[in-house]
Image (tube, rainbow, N blue to C red):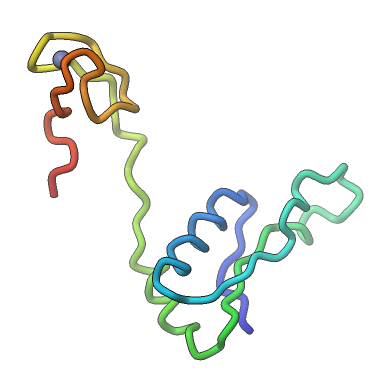
Length: 108
Ligand SMILES: [Zn+2]
């Protein structure tokens, strides 16, 4: 078993775990929930850690995480529907009013 990643934010560790699990790599997370503690444990000791269960999967797991790029949600902005002119919040990929797809959304 080898540790492959650690990060102060559990959400990121959990996201990477999901990526590896999707690829059929068995993982586990250590220090889960430690960040919710009352601060009695030294800060640097409680980062959530992502471990690969089988050493044989480690290289492949590293490859997956190295080439992973998070969705660039920071650049999304509210948009105006080309179909009905409604203002739609950035979280939505479709117009809530008429169902039109966000311009440029979902294209590769
Ligand atoms: Zn619309």
